[in-house]
Image (cartoon, rainbow, N blue to C red; front, side, top):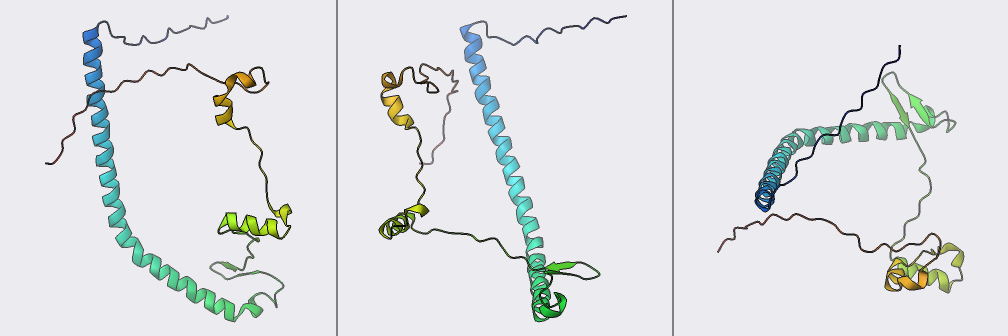
Length: 174
């Protein structure tokens, strides 16, 4: 026997019924927004206190951990030839864990990009300079009629947002 699938009606949304309702609701929106801000501030205060308390406990342990790691590395570097079989392997397993020597991949860093680009151009090393082409959206927005009908390009205008801003009083120290 086939069962009927019931379709549930969407929940009704509250709608203001008068200008008085709107004014009262905007006040309530301000109240709730301030409550959220207060709770968020309280939460952040508690997180800061917890972080501070644990940081005091973590700091000496991190220092001890770093000292132990340095000691293990110093011993392993001194015995690297034995541990790696003369450089045949890059790791060694102890009963309690493993140590490894890993080569990082090459990296490139640029300081003073404009000066480096000028120098590369001066040395005819343009192959090391990337040129990026992209649509100039600011120019399109300045002349929307010129690009009318260009496939893949559209200019969106007239989008309207509805904004509710409850009035807030700020206290200032005099």
